[in-house]
Image 1 (cartoon, rainbow, N blue to C red):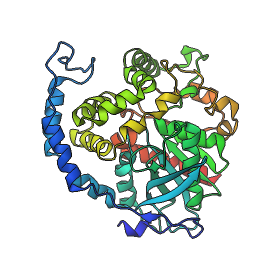
Image 2: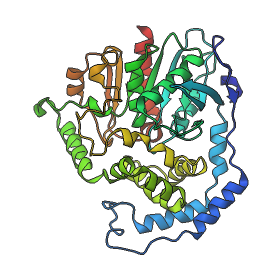
Image 3: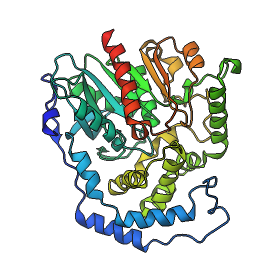
Length: 410
């Protein structure tokens, strides 16, 4: 199956090199040794509550460690390598990047390109269930889209020559746009994003004419209005906004640390897999919909990828740019960040939005309709959380395909 979707468009400006994910066996053995020797801290009053209000429980960490020692990383590699994967050299903003991406290329002449952008603490692995659904549903001859799933800049398998300057949303957007141009999509493509990917997708729509539409499942920081009346909201939307407000008060410690002391937290988590398991595992437990939680196997696969690719210490750049204070709805970025209000392109281009009920921040439909005249698609779901493509791949894919049908028909 991998090779059947691997043929690039004839107008591609580069021919990326095929890539296979394979962590050396000695790295896996070293990881297991480090994990087995890592001690779990003593029990405390805070580590006992089963609701995770104060973070991961000691009991969960003990269970997860035992499972991780038995975890078969090669199964994850096999899932990844079932799809075409590539690496390509991209120069943007005066820096050279070696960009990794997975893809399903269509052989249809009118196939519309779409790039899927993950966030933190995610990776391109989030989209594997979606790729599997697409490969089951279509052949290269029937696939209506060119599907591009990169490791975003400074994450996972995408690297750059040096780190003499911080990554920014505008720089990351430039790299991702240049990737699409080099793949032959200069005439137009759509971007999809959640979490950090939402910021990159929105910035791409703001900065680059090649990005003609964008779909989000988490609003970018300055997209949530603060001056609209609450009486426009439904009961469910009010509950969601209250939940988001509570999260702003009690769930932002990680953002403070990553935004103000990235060097320290990066060195700490990169030295101990158990520390990384606690820090990142907490997010997969808390941010997913508890009614259909992610399996421990999925969580371990996601964190293993961070460990083996040495991703964490580089991945916190968005939190530096988002500022050193608690992000508030409607707050503006620093001067180097693309602001929607300053770049009208993003508010003119077709926007799609999927609202999952347990997402940490959601734009209510009535507010979205009043704020964004370019909104062409909005769907509110009854289940699902922050990791929409991973938690609810079928519903997520249906939304994106419906949005793409609207956009490609224009």
